[in-house]
Amino acid sequence: MLQEAADEGFEWAAVRLGWMFEYGHHVAKDADKAIHYYRIASTADEPDTFYRMGGLLQTMEKKADAADAFEKGAMRGHIGCMYWFGWGLFENADCDADRRKGRELIQNAAARGHVWAKHRLISIEWRETSSPFRKMRLAAEIAICAALAFKAAFRDPYPAELH
Image (cartoon, rainbow, N blue to C red; front, side, top):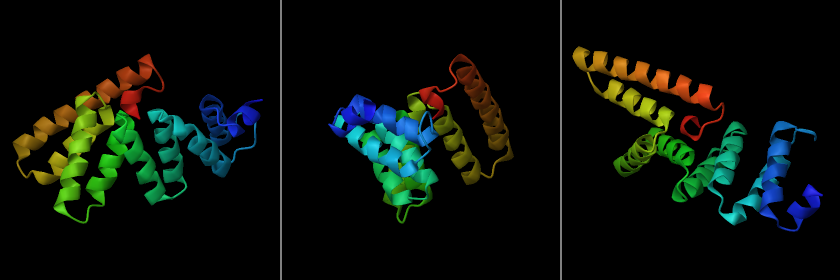
């Protein structure tokens, strides 16, 4: 029934089928079918669908497609997509404008509570500073991020601020 509903364009069914194929839940694990159903679900502009699709495409080594999915999710306000798209821009930037845009996306995700984005900003600052005193302060901030991540994962094993 889910497959029939998804094939008729019902996004709610397509996202569930995508998840089932991604993880092999009651079906044979099939990344290509998962992507097919996530693409159907993405027509509803559900930001989490872009995140799921981007993550799967990234594991399939389809970096450009993953970046496109993360960008679409980021434009719709998904903090995980903001982080991953921003990080990709920052690390693979061909110009300063892309690095700035990537850093802004990471900062936006961090400001909205994304723990890995906060950690990434600290790591970037660590690389850019030579002051041992600043590095000690940054080490303390990394410890705080780790504690927040543990607390968030304990509260909810799949919290948005960790993905």
